[in-house]
Length: 189
Image (tube, rainbow, N blue to C red):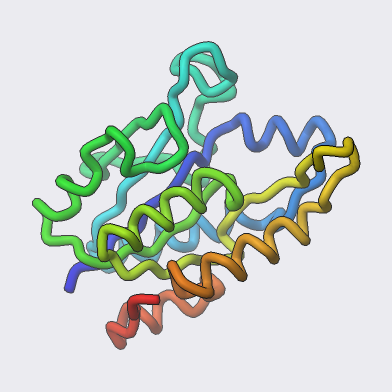
């Protein structure tokens, strides 16, 4: 079995949200993503970077907010795909790319936990990929309710990880990923 690291939307727009005062969780998520990158690179395992590119939004190619954060920058030989929707699998050819390279398991990290990470995790599971979700390597933000109040970022992340962990992925901390790769124990949810 071959496991790939899939990094979702680690772009400067996320850092800009935090700098603007948006409530968030996992302030060390960029560093945890960097830890996962270092692990996969050291072991010669595949890395796939997914970047959001949607015209008319802050994530349109060429805008400063669409740039990749330094901790998640791709290096030569790593795959970079762009998406315009929520799931990294929708209309990108990601499934075909992974299968052509013999990748049959995924470690997933990135942004935003309740949105693109969730969509990608569910799609991966639906396509039969066992997913290991590095919960502390996910960025997440608070959300507005219909009545105008807000759901705090910690609650949003807790509910997101609980739902994903119940049926779509195995949720673990970043420091557990190395052992899981070594023992091959990434199971289907």
